[in-house]
Amino acid sequence: MAAIIIIEDEQRIRELAAKALAGNGHAVRTSATAMDGLHAIVDSSPDLVILDLGLPDLDGMELLKMIRAVSDVPVIVATARGEEPDIVLSLDNGADDHLVKPFSVEQLEARVRAVLRRAQIAPRGTPVTIGGLIVDASAREASLDGRRLELSPKEFDMLRYLAEHAGEVVSKRRLLAEVWRQPYGGSDKTIDVHLSWLRRKLGESAAESRYLQTVHGVGVKMVEPA
Image 1 (tube, rainbow, N blue to C red):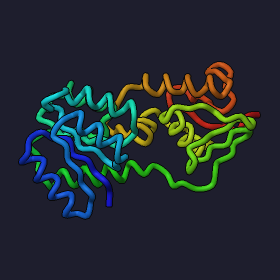
Image 2 (cartoon, rainbow, N blue to C red):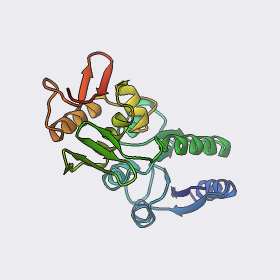
Image 3 (cartoon, rainbow, N blue to C red):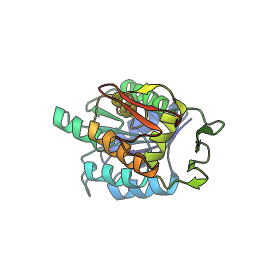
């Protein structure tokens, strides 16, 4: 069972979606406006958000940006905006999936299952140690040579994923899918920027790498320093 918030101003769609998802055992909460939905997300920390873009008080794309500023909760955008630029923009702004109206209840349920499945990126187990780097997924903490690293949520998620797959070359596409949950593509610049920030906090650079080794044209690999 997942805790799901539906932010949708059309009452019929809101009620049909809520009934279907509740019938599958999910705990569903609904909001008809952007700001009520944002408050619900902050108050209840849901497992998933279903977001319409055509909201009465604020454009849903702006709400998506606000959600991403405070939470990494998976978001399915469910909207009448089905042109490719709209889909690309919603995914680049942090949506995990983009569902175009009209859609069936069955399709919505399938998208919910898929996004919730992807959201469980890796098991939370024993902290990973690589050289002087320790990454504790359960505590969401990382330290280097005994000093705690101050990381943003996405910096930590990327570091954790690379640490848990140490020795493997991880492509940017894979990072976008597994960490940013954008299986349909996204901007490589997002990965490049976060890698740059991570390298700086690990006391290295692309030219003088210690932990994050770039494999040109393929991806990046976490290694133990020589």
